[in-house]
Image 1: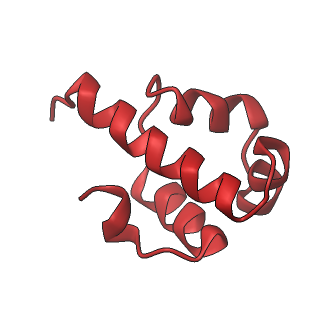
Image 2: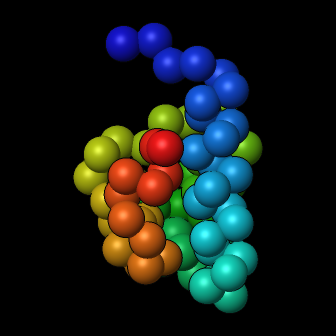
Length: 71
């Protein structure tokens, strides 16, 4: 499945906005979901696509619905 670059950036921006609202650093989010802070940065920049499992962990930590990330 091809992913649109704009869609990736949109997901990344939503994650970054929710992370900042939760007052978490990339390092703190990364630690809580079990990935590197570099990977979180790549996701937020729209350079990587998180797996459904990782996206679910992110949404749970940030207190948002998984579907909100992809609206």
